[in-house]
Length: 206
Ligand SMILES: Cc1cc2nc3c(=O)[nH]c(=O)nc-3n(C[C@H](O)[C@H](O)[C@H](O)COP(=O)(O)O)c2cc1C
Image 1: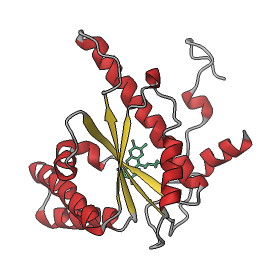
Image 2 (image 1 turned 180 degrees about the vertical axis):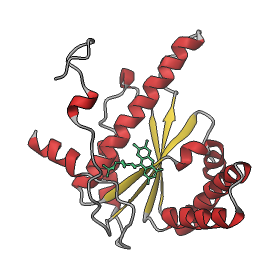
Image 3 (image 1 turned 60 degrees about the vertical axis):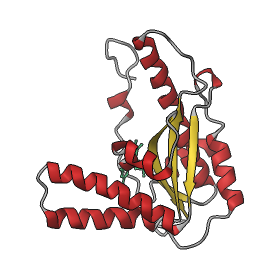
Image 4 (image 1 turned 90 degrees about the vertical axis):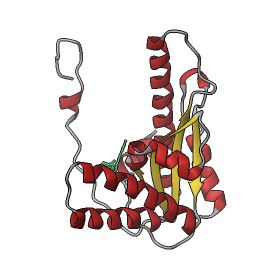
């Protein structure tokens, strides 16, 4: 029990990596741990796409940066600022030894005729994927790896789908960088327990 709580508290988002290769056996352990997450109906509605080849990482990073830059241009961000952000974004993802695209699929989830229950079912699938991603991060930490969960892919799902030729029934959600850490980040502050949990619906503190 203590081990799990220690792992939860000492895991950090690692954003810089050494060039040390991640053995396939370690990658398998991490992905297998992701697959032991709880899921609605035990449907296990996740798919993970692992990119390790430089050309694959570069293509994806450039495509995502392109989509982001188009949005920034619409917002009126200056070309020089866009150029700098674009470079930093591509470097962030190409320098990571591995990129994992965490996807959700409704394939084995229940199907409802009405839109409202179908929306709930989708929420359940995305919640399940979140649990799997957290397992993945904790397992990576336990194996001496570092990882960071990025939202970049969630803002350009169709771009990611096109580049990686992801089938229609699978939807890219999160992007995780993975590798051996080259930094030891400090723990960002957490909210006090009393500020986010209540003993009852009258707001009495724990
Ligand atoms: C859904 C989600 C999206 C995130 N997106 C990003 C991101 O786009 N860029 C980034 O640097 N970190 C991202 N993070 C990592 C958070 O910044 C990080 O978890 C938070 O600051 C707490 O730090 P810790 O993970 O080291 O405890 C994301 C985390 C989650 C759960």
